[in-house]
Length: 505
Ligand code: HEM
Image 1 (cartoon, protein in one colour):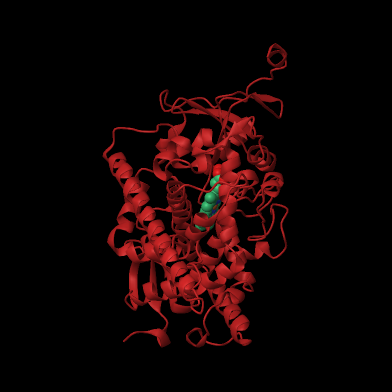
Image 2: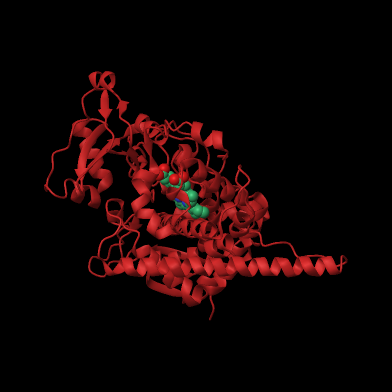
């Protein structure tokens, strides 16, 4: 260690504190992207600040993204940074409660379940759920707060597709409330403190127990059903057994680790909770942001409708109410829709900062980043880089017509297997789904889910941002960075009218 300490480089520049105890928590917490950009202008693209007594070292720009996302396990870990936050919510034996090699296998189990044939089955489910939700709305509304509606739709679609029909059927009783209680314990402060004497944590822990039990009961029911089918087939081989459910829950029940062992029932239940938490806000906020962007861009809405009409009927002028059912195969051909989603994720990445805990000193750009620091990347910062994305504040799907230097891979084309994920290059400005071994496995599902919802939404409604009663203007939605996932501020609303031919009355 003496050789290492002799060659120790200087620490990254430290951003001065504003409030001694909180460190830089307040400006970072309220406006992280512009705060980080200001720090970057002053201190360069690698710097440290203190938050809640912890040193957070940011590596911004594409090199920084690459450095953080592909850091070696021996140097820095995600579980070190995230376990306080996630283990009480997800539970034991999964994700950040297990060694990284186990997480890699668990991610592969999930990824393997999300096959093309599964997606073909999911798209009609998502379409039906969207149609049912929209049908329950009045024909017009001057002020609809969008995010809670999209959150409701997402929990219905994601639970139906991923968790299984049993969970979807229980949504109206207890699952939605349990989800809410779990979520209340999923706060940025928990990155720093595992447990604070707050009432919401009692609710969180209680919800975790009941949710786990709910999944355990479903597992037991599925086993009983499978056993009685097997017995019936054994007694009478002419009976044809119904296929097992095609969802992630079933795949995890059947999955086998490389060492031949299986996930315990608790681990399966906990993994389902983890997926629910990982997918819910990220997808529902992304859907909301796309609609908010489209609410200010009627030309793109019209072009999206022409694209659907062209792909589904061969005639771009087919009116929305005469369009045939949306399918997985059609969705794959909506290139403008892809660009819209991509551009909205550039501007509104749900996860603005990712973190690792340094466990062995690192060297980066002439600095030593010592053990104990949180090592952070913020793709949201590079996604606003004017050098890569001219006029970066502007929502402009056409910037994706030519693949940009900032781009890394195409949505959905990433392929998981132990080696590929670890070696995927991350020297990119555009990484809303992360990179490297912790890269998102829900991207393709999210992409299909969000794409189907947006396609159904533009068919059904004409919409704008809500008019401000005082100014008469229609202001854009603003981001709220104070929760873990970047959401629109409370109250962000649209005005809509159902298209003439689709009205109920
Ligand atoms: C990881 C973003 C939807 C499951 C990640 C990461 C990001 C991300 C940035 C990397 C985190 C890190 O490196 O620390 C998103 C976005 C989504 C989305 C923008 C939607 C628009 C989903 C969905 C699921 C999901 C729907 C579940 C079906 C996961 C899982 C990981 C992950 C399991 C791996 C965590 C790890 O390996 O440490 N996601 N996600 N995500 N996401 Fe997503």
